[in-house]
Image 1 (cartoon, rainbow, N blue to C red):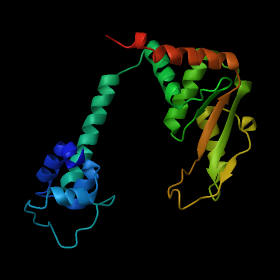
Image 2 (tube, helix red, strand yellow; image 1 turned 180 degrees about the horizontal axis):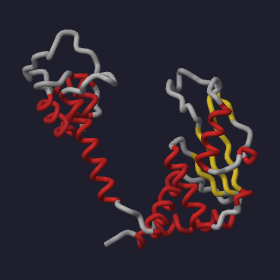
Image 3 (cartoon, one colour; image 1 turned 135 degrees about the horizontal axis):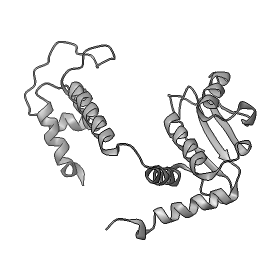
Length: 218
């Protein structure tokens, strides 16, 4: 496909070049800086000031960075308006879709693993709301890099999920590997498990129905 497959990005890059650096444009469009350099090589550009540094938190955003932040705020507000207040049915289907993407599919326990606290809270609330959970059968196991505060992480997830810490399994402490990743989640990655094969099969029945052609509109 080559560069012809990014005509919109090329045109946008040329529009932004009037007051944007190569780095800013590449960051906004999600493309390589080398690509931007090629696309705008014949577009006049006057630097705003010598030795311009990358934008940092606390510094007033300018050019593409300001436009990016404004667009994020606008689209976030639009998203809240479009979703609105979910009905019980909306919540039921949304939880099924969430499990379809992130839940364990192998026959057996209901299991959900994610680093995002909001997604974990959504799952736990959905599970309790629609499946008559026996709280004593809920378990949580934490994946946490060595060097991070296990006590604080367990308190955090216990408060969020309302699963007592005496129902937590032994945490898996991973050794950081700089060759694989640099960032580490300070509160780790929890796996919430509900030991009920029947519930898991019921959920997977819903997942199958959700993903069937018959469920699609029109």
